[in-house]
Amino acid sequence: MPEQRARTYHRNRVANTFSEEIGAMLEGELSDPRIAPSYVTDVVLAPGGKSARVFVAVHGTEAEEDSTLEGLTTARAYIRTQLRDRMGVRHVPELSFAIDRSQKMTGRMEELLARTRKRDKKRTDSEPSAPPAKP
Image 1 (spheres, rainbow, N blue to C red):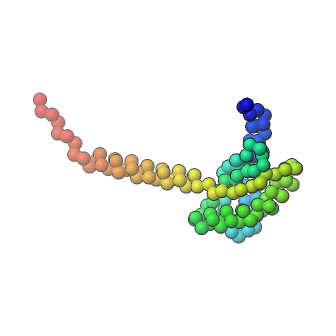
Image 2 (spheres, helix red, strand yellow; image 1 turned 45 degrees about the vertical axis):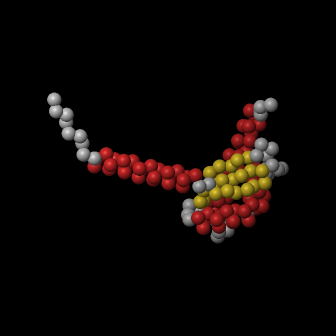
Image 3 (tube, rainbow, N blue to C red; image 1 turned 90 degrees about the horizontal axis):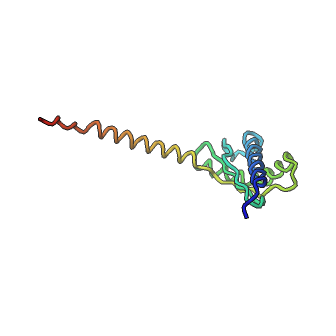
């Protein structure tokens, strides 16, 4: 049986609200020194609403990503409490955090494609053009 549109719409609204609220907490409310400058890229809410996965992009090195993930995992209970208070809901799903590396991967792919294009252009420019055919 297909899921009802209203339920999907509600879940998307809740996920967007979680994203905004957790993003606001990341901007300055969480004082853990392990948390590097970061932002929420996506929140995926489970169909039953019992759990949510929060994807976070970190500006920094891989070590900073690891420490940020550690800090967010430690602050998970605080974040859930704040979400409950701010949203006025009875149930806040279990939160799990994951590092979102998609934008770094996209940047790397663009860099590699640019190199390939440059190499191809250089190769076509360096090849001698064929002499004109004699009639």
